[in-house]
Image (cartoon, rainbow, N blue to C red; front, top):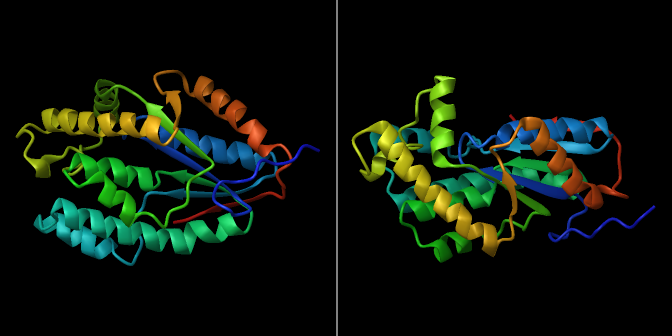
Length: 232
């Protein structure tokens, strides 16, 4: 059996991160990949970018009252992520699971920079977060994400549209401008952080096949023993 490549973070598990704009298809692909890994008897833990109980109430109230400055927004989400990492990501990573993250610290890098925070400062705040084994970036035009959003009939979130930044009084226009900022930041990180770029305009089946092929060398020789965990 071939030797399993050593992880960059120093833990026995493997850390797979899915990043991209809302509507890029990353969540669908992360869920499908987790199920595929489980079907091959790998121990899998799936986690999403949800607020922890520690600060969720503060963030919710701050958003409702419009009290969150870009810096405050950044710090609260950093505390939130740190709590989630220590409680839900680190334990399975240390226990040898394949951890599938639907968004990671890179989401903060992108969103905070797009809101005017100093990128170097943000990276320092998140310096506790280890580098993943794979960072899949789902590249998609902003126009496509807006089309998918409207087709889903889901209401465009105030902060998702960057309405707090005063980019436009029109929700769709503000969404387009803010998401374009996010995309620009993702494109910068794609080179700096060596993202594996995925063309997300293709079919679900084509993308999933590419992900599986990309991961196979990393999984050769990796311990199995099926168990699927999911944070809630």
